[in-house]
Image 1 (cartoon, one colour):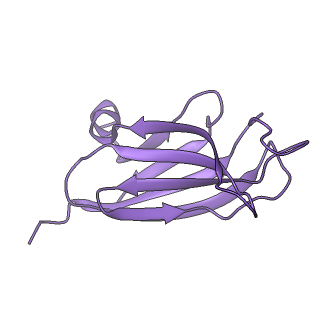
Image 2 (spheres, one colour):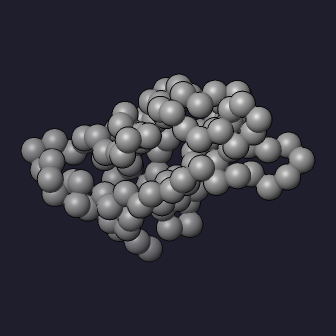
Length: 117
């Protein structure tokens, strides 16, 4: 059995100026994948500047990249992809060795925070 390195808590605050995939806006949500694990935020309806303010937790057995995928929820068709990113947690942890937490993101996800317990 693999040894648990820790629990990774990802605090997803908000998205800013996300693309509109429906007529006027999107219904965004985010999926985080680490190995076989997958966690998902709630869907925020009709909002290009969603606020999730959710904490999602993944078990880390090895420092694999975390895949982040942002989607627009659709009712009658396949959900539209709004964007994706890989979070290289090992590099992030090395850059903040004094603390086992920090923040990461791009222009749409400036407020993504994480903590490894």
